[in-house]
Image (cartoon, rainbow, N blue to C red):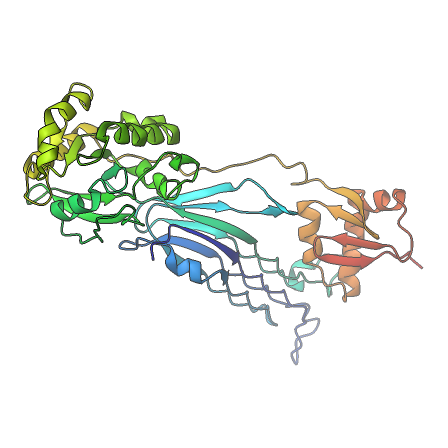
Amino acid sequence: MFADQARILVVAGNGGDGSSSFRREAHVPRGGPDGGDGGKGGDVILEAEAGMTTLAELRRRRHVRAAAGGRGARRRAHGRNGADVILRVPPGTVARISERQGDERADPVDLGELLAPGDRLMVARGGKGGRGNVHFVSPTHRAPTHFEKGQPGEERWIELELKLIADIGLVGAPNAGKSTLLAALTAARPEVGSFAFTTTSPNLGVIGFDEDESAVIADLPGLIEGAHEGRGLGLAFLRHAERTRVLVAVVNGAAADPVGEWRGVEDELRLRDPALLERPMPVVVTKMDLPEVRERWQELRRELNRNGRSPLAVSAHDGTGLDALRHELHEALQASGAALQPDQPVRVHRFDPLESGWRVIRESGALRVRGKRIESAASRIDFDNDESRDRFQRTLERSGIDAELRRLGAQPGTLVRIGKVELEWGEDE
């Protein structure tokens, strides 16, 4: 099954906890702390792989999780780094962050796209490892027991969308003869039938011009009126026309109204993206082996004249016009210049007032502290360690969060939530 969309949950590995330990060896007085750092959590990375053409594998693998980093150890031993997870995707894949807010789905945020084999894109970053107690020695505190827990890895839903990268795209109404034409021009063997919508997924083939030149040609499913709004199969596959250098207008010569049928397809392309109609677009009238099509050819030729260029008459069954079409496609590709460059990967940065600051809000039965830095700091504290807990309390006091919590009515027993950490407020004795 052709799959050009997938939605998956990616979870990077948590960083490993630092270690709190002390050097204890015979004849080594005042050995001091020697706790090592935790290892970094594994990343989740997309990599474009040549030869892949669908996202079917990722539609079956909905949850992807990287390995966590290892814990630090005594003698300043560093924990192992978690292994990265490499997800293979086809060239032309676009990745977006997909988040849900309540029952509504937020607009996806672009992460980037992978255009050529070997391109890589990190979609979830592993957490940093926590520091061991050796880092917290000071002239006035020679034996700290405090250490940092590992930072949580990023976790998010992402949407993947494949836009096939082809040089030439065959577009037309259902049953216009696109698949038959593809089979006649290339070695591809798409499903061909006498009924509409035989093609339910794009077919790819390679058309040769000479010993050194060739191009990838894609047969896209038929377009009907309203395709840009989701009718038929058009909305699902119009995206694949966006990365072609040349489009071929395939007109069904045996249709009741060939010109009107093509104008409808042309309108759908315009509504999807007006720039599509500005690309080189040879027009071909198919099924010229049929007597009724040959009879109306001159009329069709006049009405389908595009930019001063007459349409080509072709028949995939008896070979009529195929050599002329190959020559026309070769010229169109040369006229289009270098391969079409899709938009550069989009890196979106939105100013977040909570990136470095904080805010305290009331929520059901608790007070919540929001802010990237304070949430990250809380996630790395071992609240079972008295020294670590005291250090975090001083952080709250220095930042002003402690005073704001008191102003909003925090008293012994009040729940305070910071990220995924839930604390019970208490007064110093």
